[in-house]
Image (cartoon, rainbow, N blue to C red):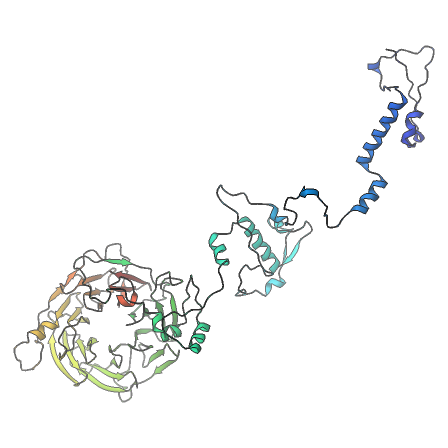
Length: 617
């Protein structure tokens, strides 16, 4: 193989600026001098393949094509500019290249990596305000329009930008982007997807009563009830339509069920929500509606609906409350067979709240007896709702009780008992024809409202500072001169509770006495209970007299349940772990009012302002 020695001339600016086609021809091979040296191929800096002219022309075409593809040319640029389409739509034969993702947003092309088995739901479509609900927002902040947030200044907010130049947004746009980012990262729960697909709310009646078209339309405007989650109707509408609060009795619920002694089948339910700001000193149930009334020295009265959840939105919801300024409430009670509530404090006046109209009436005096009624803090309403017994403040010669009419609020009669220390407690007979009055010295007086006289006086055995009494049950002697209550229990300051059977007095009348009364002057108690060691503060009977609860507020967890007629204390309840506290109020509610397979409901209030509820089955 022969080699040629090449002398490389210096490159001039004119040579490199010449056209590409002429550069190769200008590069000539010049013969060397006489004493030229032979240079091997591997030692030379540049080698040129001196081939035929045809091969050089083909190489020039390839280089020209490569240069056109890499750097482009003016002719191709003009052609591409003419064929450019703003919509970027091209005709594709036989559907080749169609992926179905052409119309999606950039955010929809990404998915969130989740654990195996989880599925990412579709993002919730929001309106202009960023709300996914059909309903308008309940509240809007006017400062959102004036608020300015920088998305580029805070590193953790840069992911909310739509473009790199996006920076300042107002408050509404900022909340909308936060909501969108949250929906992208958090899968939509099934219950939310199900709720969004529900049809519009349907209006229906809460009861099966027949209404006129006008009444039904008016009622539908006030009460909206969803098929899945019913709402609590307004209080006035609840009270006007009694069927909304009273459940239909189940089969066999009308039969009298007997409670077994010694063992109590009791189950705790949801507590009454909220903690009242003071001790609850007054607690009572409505006789026909599942309503619980509570109050205390905080001057506020609370009305709760006793209902489980579901169907109620929340268990035992609060219906309404009433605050009486400057009146620490001591006694509150429903008026039977009415929609009114009587409430009083240690003041010269008391109030009447009509739930149907919402009007609160203030009664300032008992005309003609102002000097005997300087305080109206303690009263009792008769079971028929027609009379009100007010404990007078005068203690001269014993104690005084004034009887008022609940219809006219006028004074009707008065009973005065000669008891050392005054009156400890009093209670209406079941038939509302009289009162049973206990003096602090242990003397019990049976007073008739119809005859306006004392029917009997008798002494509680072993009474040491009588504190409270209660009547319960019912006997068969309808024409009894001392009412139709079978049981009477009397508590004392020593914690002893005596239970008497009044039916035994009527079935076997005592020998004629100088008093001519149907009750022996010193009867023996049927049972004496000594389970409480501090003064008895509360006694209450169930609706049919098969159970009695006794409690003392002076000691923690001092509460016992008693079975009647065996007069035995239940052994299995309450236990050491039953959360009672210092009991300040107890109340029973009949099972048919509560509904279900329930004999009665027991509510217990304590000094901490809590109310707990149990169901006896």
